[in-house]
Length: 91
Image (cartoon, rainbow, N blue to C red; front, side, top):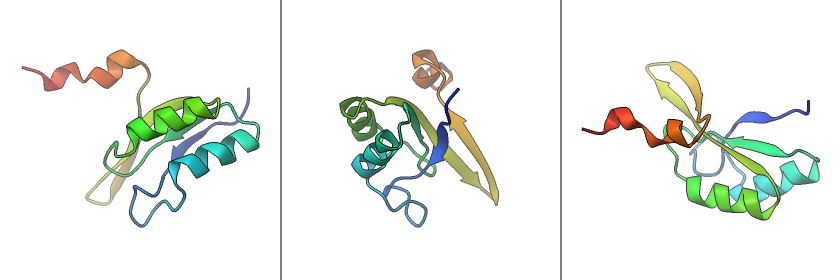
């Protein structure tokens, strides 16, 4: 099994990430990797751009976010479209 970066921040994460989504996807592809997770801090700010750039560079995108609150951190990754739907947020 190949290595997969599961906690990567783009320039949308102020103070954490410096690379643009396109730069990150190209770098991962150039390293011969097939997948990349984008986990910007406390949000899915670049989600649409990430999915598009990943597909254009031949990568399989993994959607997620690094959640931070009160000094605690957790990386949340979406396993499938059902998990992204967030049914628990609906009435």
